[in-house]
Structure formats: structure tokens, C-alpha cells
Image 1: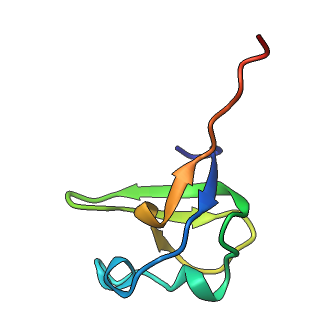
Image 2: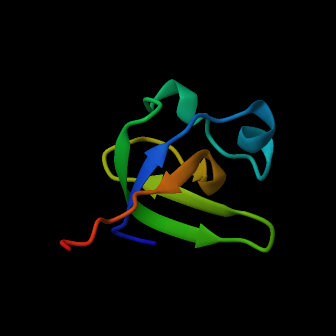
Length: 71
């Protein structure tokens, strides 16, 4: 997951509070693409750090960018 691109889809209060994550709604724009800098997998959730963005966020607030094949 490190180095991959993700798109922010918004975060609910429960997603933010689960595991004590930071609030991505304050620093990320819905629909915008970000790059994953760090990834920390826990037993029930995964926290990600984004390049150039302060905070650590629940990965469920993001979805992977679908890379298009050149065909």
C-alpha cells in the first residue's frame, strides 16, 4: 500500500474515532487523490499517513485508485 494512490471519500465520526485516528475531513478534499506514505496494519483496521498531509487516518476513508491498463 505504501506508494499507492488513494482517493478520499469522506470520513464518518465513527471511522475517525475507531483506533483514535485524526480527522481527514479537516485536511483532505473529497474526491482528491493522495499518495500513501506509511501504512500501519492493526488487527481490526489500518492506519495510513499521506504524503504532505499531517495526521494518521483510517484507511476506510479512502479507496484505491484504479490503474488503467494501456489496452
